[in-house]
Image (cartoon, rainbow, N blue to C red; front, side, top):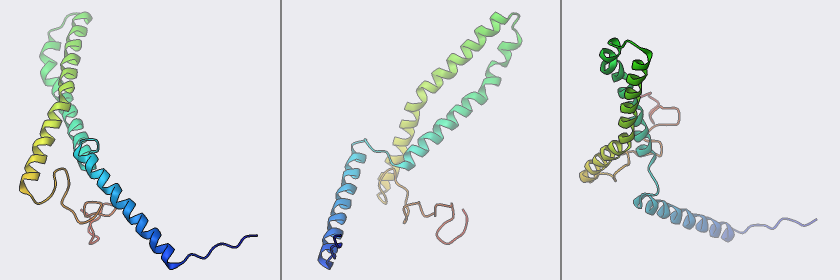
Length: 145
């Protein structure tokens, strides 16, 4: 049975330097990917999904007020189907353009944030990886937000 080799202090230091260099190189790769638009910061992705859900909710909530008068005047089921079809088409058309509206809004927000010069666009000002909060939603002082 072979005995395990003892690791020297130099070997551990070499490994630590290698790991550090690899991590540094990976961080730079991620920065480049973000600048090239291949990587989206999680804050931006979450903001986009929040805007998309809010826009969808607003569009759906407007349906009754927009279409109630048209539905009241209907006499046949076919008329009802035609009105509902138009309603769905309008909703889908609204949703189709939502991606571009969200992109434009986020771009404006990032431009404003970047022009302040205090932090890069698309990033929150925070000192920790979790935006100043622990994974349980409390800030670093233990107070819930």
